Amino acid sequence: MSYTVPDIEPLESILPDEPLLMMGAGPVPIPARVAAANGIVINHLGETMARIIEQVKAMSRYVFQTESRHILGVAGPGSAAMEMAVINLVDPGTRVLTINNGFFSSRLGEMARRAGGEVMEMDAGVSHAADEAAVIEAIRTHRPRVLTIVQGETSSTVLNHTLPAICRAASKAGCLVICDAVCTLSTLPLEMDAWGVDVVITGGQKGLSSIPGVSLIAFSDRAWAVIEGRERTLTHWCLDARLAHQFWYNKSYHYTAPVSGILALHEALRLVCQETLPRRFDRHLRCSRALQAGIEGLGLGLYIEGPSRLNSVVGIHLPEGLAQADLMQHISCHHGVEISGAFGANIVRIGQMGEQCRTHHLFRTLHALGTSVRSLGYKVDVPAGVAALELALAGYQPVYA
Image 1 (spheres, helix red, strand yellow):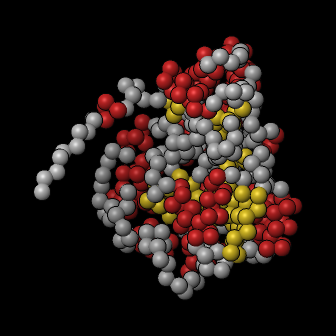
Image 2 (spheres, helix red, strand yellow; image 1 turned 120 degrees about the vertical axis):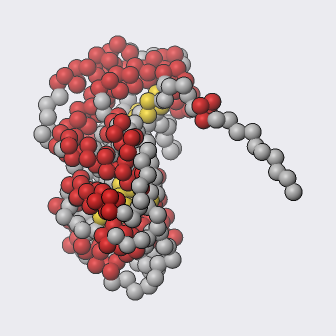
Image 3 (spheres, one colour; image 1 turned 90 degrees about the horizontal axis):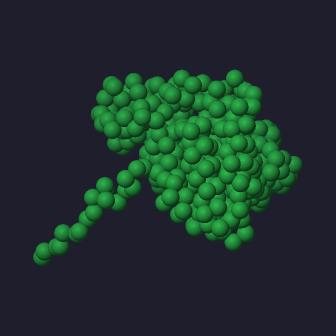
């Protein structure tokens, strides 16, 4: 039997001549040192790898703001880290309270249901943070063993600024908190130990400015005690936290680790530590606020108001009649800039995570956005938008440093 060799185009004929500037909801541009590290392959069980793993854990403790000795890497996207958190803490019949602000927080609830959990999904709305009093009442009535929440809901651009208070209430009720920080870790404060978060999840491809496909998860001692006390054997092999712990802490084989991705993550974390979290938080806040001022200067509206607005991913109302797809295609084809649409609302989203928060990227993106909207027949004031961006950048006063 013979098979026909398929006619395959080489990558250079598929990819654009000049890479797009990735200014959507992720992945984000990566620094040259991260890209270089991602091109290296070493023995995943050798002494060199062991030294790198030790440094990744030490740097992660700083970035997560924790003393936890239960930080693990995950060979997979942020959703794989989500699933590791859920399946290791949710047994059949476990009561789970899912705080739903949109697509990704809903995903945590779906994972808990698939694990056999008894899930109560609290609709917190897609335009504002979860209400502290409402969550406390839901904890009182449902009596969950696990609560899932996102710090920043990428899909709806909502910031759950009530997270510290929710964690305090959950802790008093003996409830473990699983927090998705995929788009927020290192872009704004998250203090795992001080706030009492039991599990923090992040992906490499957003705030950390590393590659997609390698993620991090940190368990508190309280959460780890539950995992250690588990009597049943998980049906998942790769996502069994106890097996992963053997590799990350005892140099024992679990599966072939994504060594290139771990090296890239090492460099990304090193750059975060070199910059320091306070300076990094200020850089993100300065750039995001300036971008938001520029967007409003164009004459466009921001999707979320007040303290519930997520600075890491900015939602933008579109003029009546302008479709997301048309704007995204125009800005990509004519300006080499990629932004994101949204799940549901007629908005577009611009990311402000990691390497996206550079002033030259802001000017290019805002100009591309404004001229694209104008080219598609809608009125915006591009010079006013650029002027507002410039003024906000110059007037920023450090908050964290």
